[in-house]
Amino acid sequence: MSGKEPQSRNDVAWIVGVGASAGLGAALGRRFSKSGLIAVLTGRNAQRIETIAREIEAAGSRAVALPGDVSSAAELERLAGAVAGLSFARGDLQCWQCRARHATGT
Image (tube, rainbow, N blue to C red; front, side, top):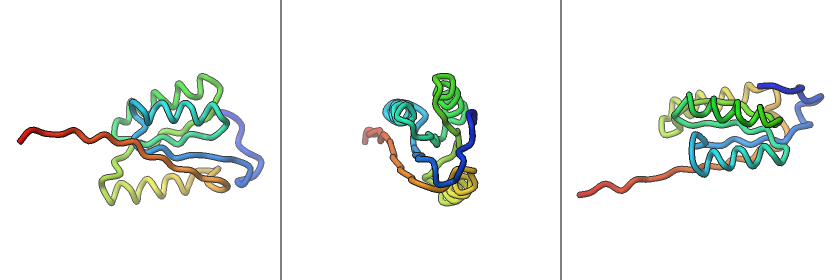
């Protein structure tokens, strides 16, 4: 993560995006970060999440990449712990989830 740390853990608004490695999830991460929120991006594709976080920071906003699969209880617990451990993990929190289901033939 780049940029100055907030003066207080309560001085910052941030958002956790689940499914933020592509499509609508990635677009929302970019959009929310432009509005001043710190985007915490999660998704299964670690390389893609990290690339999107770098793009957001290169545009002058703040982002954190936390790859993981929230369909796994153990991974969800790990991600929750990682989010809670972030230096700015206080103050306002918002969360969004973007997920696509693909139909399979029978």
